[in-house]
Length: 185
Image 1 (cartoon, rainbow, N blue to C red):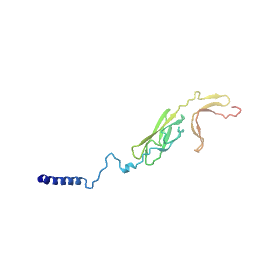
Image 2: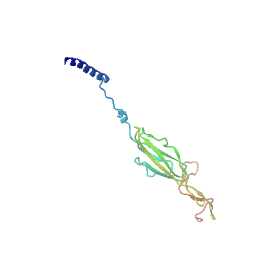
Image 3: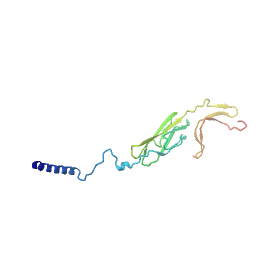
Image 4: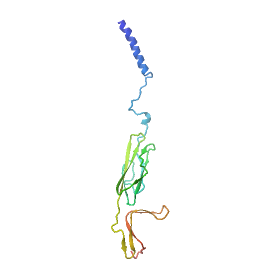
């Protein structure tokens, strides 16, 4: 028995020393899947504070919790700019934010994706732009009192070099080459 104790005691001491040498300060390391405190403090906000379009009107009115919108534009519109403003300045937004997108007849879908600061949370805002082709069945009409009526298609028109003098035509109509009086009308 003395012999067994004589050999066991040094082995037990040696085992304790090896364990102490492996981790002398008894520090535990975090699991690789556990996020650090810095990562935990990163924001998960994926909302926009505003969403605007350069042509037409968003339907419904912007609300951060609504992610799908429509815009109707006249046939004269060839490009549109959809711009989202981030609620959290540390979040990121897709590269097509605020850039001109070509609008074709029919529907054009523009998607803005917001990625939260933490890099994992994401939200997509989708704007569907509807562009109709306006056709006038009889482009020119000749009136005996006012002459030839020429079609005016929907769009924005500037009266002069002043940017404030802009008129928007939403429906097609015809305009005469001569002025008419109320009596002639």
